[in-house]
Amino acid sequence: MATEIKRIDLSRDYQAHKEEYIKAIESVCEETAFSGGKYADRFDEEFAAFVGTGYAAGVNNGTSALHLAMLALGVGPGDEVIVPANTYIATAWGVSYTGATPVFADCTADTWEIDPVSVEQKITERTKGIIGVHLYGQPFAYNEIKKIADKHGLFVVEDCAQAHNALYEGRQVGSLGELGCFSFYPGKNLYAFGEGGSITTDNKEYFDHITRLKNQGCDVRYYHDEIGYNMRLEGVQGAVLSVSLKYLKEWTAKRETIGERYLREIANPLITMQAHPENTRPVYHLFVITVPDHEDFVRYMADKGIECNMHYPVPCHLQKAYAHLGYRVGDCPNAEYLASHCVTLPLFPEMREDEVSRVIEACNEYRR
Ligand SMILES: *Cc1c(COP(=O)(O)O)cnc(C)c1O
Image (cartoon, rainbow, N blue to C red; front, side, top):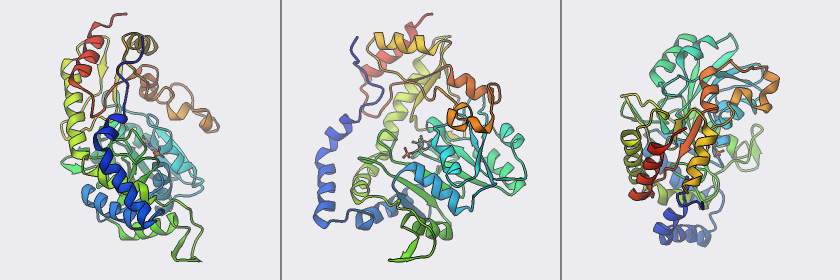
């Protein structure tokens, strides 16, 4: 059957706010503020205010945000940084780019977020810090991770790429750890018309260093104080993001309505859903479930015209790119279980009520 309900459909947002987006892009063109510049700077200020940090440094994508965060924290060859095995691979790339080694911790069996017990077991004298990921839009157990970090003198960085506007004990994610790393890849809860990212922090020293690094290593043009990168946010992306940011809370509320309906109305003993601890407000970036046979389930949904996919079919510690680290099946059992049983249901702010109902119905009618 042809796909009738897509996993995600960005065109509905574009059609709804087209004039505003085009006008914003036009201003950048009129002023030729293409790389960095007025519109990128303005978005940085707005985004820092939204997250509640003193600073936000816009960058060219979320992977760069993680990379620059590691450099600002002095991570380099010989160091280890603990990251969850169940995440998008870019969380680990940021560590690897510096010459340091990512060390993979398992996730918990119910929240599917980084497991503090596993983190503590992975600490060695080379460990410099921990990157927690607010995966699928669900904040990880920050207080528990922070307690371990403080005990061992480690930093905590938040990977917020999937969790814009999520709350942990009433605070916006990205304002908790030393640094918060965001992605604005199309399809994230807040997204650019291309690539984009940001690093949030209250620490001016980190902010200044990141600003220099993303800008070819210079504070004063043509004077390069260290080896830098070209990782600036484009003006067009800043302008588009300023428009989108105004709608983020509305989008979050819509995601919440859909996510809560799924949680309430999907009742099938074959389907397990993510646990959402009381002290968090998730933003349902991805609505992931587990089923006994995920390939069969995805086929079943496709037959009903409903597109589903999987986040993620291979856990980071078993990716070919990290084969040299010597991990084996069984090292992170919860992450491995998730990888081989996960399915992501359609969820995006503009999904209509009848579409949500159809997904729920299909889930409830599923039999093996
Ligand atoms: C999307 C994502 C990234 C990478 O962001 P890009 O903008 O695509 O480079 C990093 N971490 C997580 C958890 C992500 O989902």
